[in-house]
Structures are given as C-alpha cells and as structure tokens.
Length: 399
Image (cartoon, rainbow, N blue to C red; front, side, top):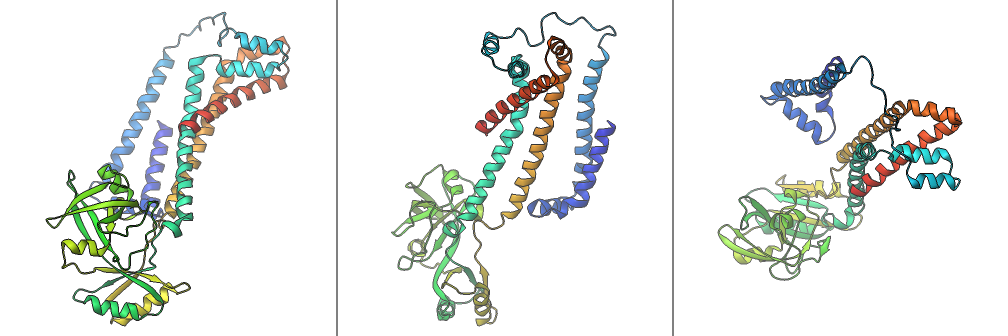
C-alpha cells in the first residue's frame, strides 16, 4: 500500500503539473479538463479507486500467504515438469546438447504454466506490433502526402456581401495562380442517419478539380462524386455504389466513383462538382476558392498579396493536407512502444526468476549428476529464449 500510495501521488502530481504541457491534443485535452467542474472529483476518485484495487489484490495474496502451514508438505516424488517426453529422450540419444533439451523441457514441460507465460509475454508484443503498424501507416501517409493531399496550395474565403465576379477577377489577375476552383459546402441528410454529412461542390465540369483518389477515379461526369472513408463506413457502401441524400429538402443522388483521403469531418464528406449542386439549387454561390499555384510560386507571398488586394476582405490561408498534424501521433506511438517494451522485458525477467526459483532443487540435482555451471546457464537461457520466441511469434501473428 505504501508503494501504491507513492505511485498514485506521483502520477497525480505529474498529470497536474505537466499534463497541460504535453504537446498535441493530449495536452490541450488535459488543459480543458482542468477547468471543468468535475475535475476535482475525478482527480480524487480515480487514484482512490486504483489504490483500493491494488490494496484488495495485495490483501488477497497476503491472506493466502498467511494460510500456508508452518511445516511445509513434502514435495511430490515426480518432477514438477512431469516425465521427459519421448521426443526429448530421442534428442538426447541423437547427440543434441543436454542443456538445449532440458531448456526446451523446462519451457514447455508444463502446458498450463507454459501457455500462461507465453500469453503474458505475447500481449505486449501484440500491442507493439499494432503500434508499429500505426507508425508505418503514418510514414506511408506522409510519404504519399503529395499524391493524396490537396492539389490546391491556398484556400481563399471572401467576406460576406462580396460578389463572385469581384473575387474571381482578383484571383485570375495574379500570374502566380494557375487555376481557381470555386467551392461550397452544405449539410446533407442521408437515409437511416440522424446526423448530417458534408456535401461539397468543388470545381466545375469545364474546369474540374484535380482529385487524387486513393481508390477508383476522379469524377468527370454528371452526378459523379468522390467520398471519404468515413462516409463509406457510415453508409456501408463501396466505390461504384449510388447514394441518395437530401439537401435543403431537395433530393440528391450521386454515383461514388472514387475514394479520397479526407481528414475533415471524420471522413464523412462527399465531393462533386459545383455544377451538379446548382442543378438542384441554382442560387448556390461559391463560399470559398481553392487556388492552384504555378510551380515555384511562394505560398506566403501569394497569400499576402491576395489578402491585401481587396482591403482585407479576402481571407487566404494555406490548404491543410491530410498528413498535417501527425507529429504528436508519432510521439505518442514512440512512447507507447517504449512502455510496452519495458513491460515485456519486466515480464520476461519475471518468468526467468520464477523458473529458477521453482527449479532450484532440480538445478542442484542436475549439478550433482554432472552438469557444469555453463550447461546450467545454457539451459536457463534456452528456456527463456524459447518462451520469448513462442511469445514473439504468437504476438506478431495476432498483432
């Protein structure tokens, strides 16, 4: 209980002092949590619950230890691992080193305990495999950011009351802007869902937006669209299906011809061209403009010039890519792998220590039979290595 209380107090103090300074969204969440009314209650109840759980588990083990009789019972005449199997005896007859055979027998002689050791060691390896898979996904996403990211370099939003032709005149006049794609985003309802999804009209049929689909193709015909993975999962559809939605009381049916990497709105976004949306609602006006710059154009310089062209009534910002904001996730994955590796190493040392303690008398008997200290060491190392190998294979396969 003293160790548990010390750990709980230190953990709570670290969360209170350094939690809000953690980079990324974790630090932001802790900072917001500290301002909530229930902060004090949670801060006290969670450590108290952890302390009670540790105390109960330790108390149960201590109660069982207190019931051990003062005079220990005689050990069974049979060895703890049971008789040596026929395969092991044949291996000894074929000249396999005794340390290797005895190490294998020590690792897998008792099935229940062997499976328990392998399972406990395989769990952190499984989680490490999942974490490394997430790391490789981040690497792949950042490596392909130029292919799956936005084709536009800047996003321009005009102040309320400005006309489309006024904004287009300024944007088209800049020689460093290669193309201007007007866009609008509206909320849409889909059958069977209580929430809304984002329906985006971007570009036109004569000047389509240059999508980079991760699957399928870009839309280039009437009623064709691309969607994010979140929308496909929400509606349980695939590329090639048709989806029906309602926009402002008007039905809209779109053919999903491609899947794009969509970081906004949890991927629940479907994008078509602006002309398709205007067929149902001719009054739609562009709410923003995606600007494609010419090769070598300075993004900051173009943004500053365009923002000052209309006396500050044009807000120009850099287009966010799908791979941006992943640096905190990398740090979290790295920390998770380090913690899991420490847990796995601790579990392996625990397995080795328990095996040596359980077979202490057996080791003395083996020494009396002629095994050298080096052979005894090799037997223990072989047993631990085989257990770790089985756990690694199982954990990696399931992970």
